[in-house]
Amino acid sequence: MAKTVIIVDDSKAVVAMAELALGELIQSGVIEFKSYLNPLKLLDGLQSGSENFDLLISDINMPEMNGLDLAKAIKTSDKHKTKPIIILTTESSNEIKMAGKEIGVTGWMVKPFSDEKLVKSIKMVLGV
Amino acid sequence: MNTIKLLIVDDIEDNRLVLKAICRKLKNFEIKEAEDGFGAVEMAKEWHPDIILMDIMMPNMDGYEASKIIKAFHPNMVIIIVTAVSDPNMQKNMNAIGVDTYLHKPIDRELVLFKLESISTSLLIKKGKVKALSKKEALNPFNPDIRSFRTIFDIVDTEAMMDFGMWVFDQCAKKDVFACNRLDLIVELFYKLMRQEIKEGHKSSIIIEESYEEIYITMKLKSELILEPRMNDILEAFQSDFIVQKNIVCAKIKKYLESDVIETAEVIYEDKKHTQERLPLTEKTEEKNLKDVHTITKKDKELLRQSFTTKTTAAAYIIDIGGDIMDEILDLASVDEEWREKLSFFEEKPTDENLKNFAESVLWVYAQTINSLLEFTALSYALTSLGVFLKEKADIITQDATKAKTIAMLLENLGHDLVSWRKHIFELQDTQDIHYLDSSFFSSCMQIEGIINDKEISCGDEDEMEFF
Image 1 (tube, helix red, strand yellow):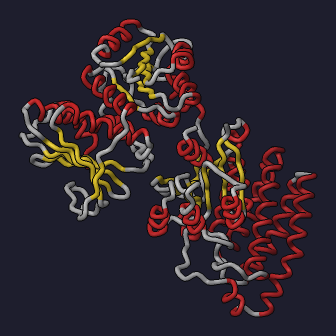
Image 2 (image 1 turned 90 degrees about the vertical axis):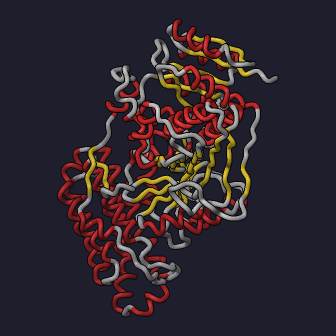
Image 3 (image 1 turned 30 degrees about the vertical axis):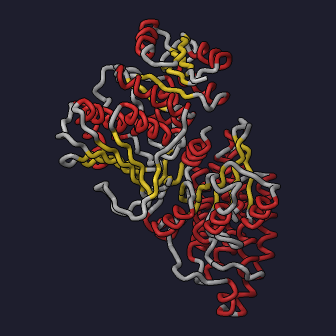
């Protein structure tokens, strides 16, 4: 069964490039790819139970909500707190990485991202 | 039933016989054999073994393919790879498909028994020895800042050794630590030390402590430390991840994956007899290879990583800018329409002229207007650079229909990002950080350039990808 990978990024360009990078995994049915431009909408979906995921990839700087706040909110949910979250951002300072680590995010990737590394990370985290 | 079903998979009969002879010592083990990967998959389906000892190099179907299929259908079956090769790529791939642990050839008879007993006991009884401490007092010499619990193993007999082995196995099974191949070596070293102590009739202890990032395994020995050559090899390979003092041996393990995590461990095996064996898997990985990498300039990197210590809200920012500039920004709504229109022309007719026309008109107007705000340096620089780049590479893009289509799609998405940016900052004025898009947009433009050039863009940072 395909694993659900959700990417949250206010940038449609980033979402489109991630989808291009993951093309092979999507087409072969290894993952189902979903995206949200607004993190609040994802939170609504997760809270109402209409949305679910196996791996979340999130940006940090978004107009409606900061990605680390999104991760924090998800980590308070019993249903989703153990699920992996990878941060995909241009931010790379140790301070902000430590903040992510304390919240419990699984990994950190910096933009611009390498297609190969994105695929590798997803495969590794999902064990596919 | 307390029986453990063990399947031995190897195409060479003598190897199966050797393993079978060793494993006969194990109580409550039922042992069967398979001659290749196909046989292993069949047996996994029909017989449901608990543990599989899997060779790699086999005819018809190799151990990697067989493990992949078995793990897909039976994720709880424990697969132990028996190999003479320590290839980092192979181990990474093996770990990715969920292989549980490794046994390295030439086979250490007692280590095989130790591992199998540890794993089987772990499968039958799941219990830990975690106890909370009221006061932190680190015993490991690496880090005094530890979490307020520790696990203690009193190594008084072989059962206690087994408990330690089970604990290590559980760390791998839970995927709490990614470096299972390192744990294999660490457990081997401590196994030898424990055996020495018990042989001398001493009661020693192993104390596990944790920080948020690392695990520390400390063994306090009662007798004088005697390092066998193999132990020296392991210590040498791990270097600073081991501290050996008078009667204390301590190992440090990172809880998260480092891209080079197995580099040190592989050193040990370089001089082993069978390094000439190369797996088809590795060759495939090497063949597939990967795009060229373009490392961005220092100047671009500084702009990309610029940080704004104080966040400016859209509402606060708008109060400070003049009415004329505000009008200019709001006029960009008409440029948005032009953006879509000119891209449609290009999609219908992907010619140099149509692409250059797009770059010279809409991209240029956007870049100039944003530049006049003096606040969004990365955004205006990204648009200007992208415009210049598209003009320069127009011929390359238009010669390749797929590339032209991809670029049109990505430019349309960039347009959407700018519309959204304008809306949040200048119309709704609802964002807490007016710079939320700057670096990300710049990064996207660089990545688009990479797609056109068939190159991966890299910032040259060692930590582009990090796991905690």
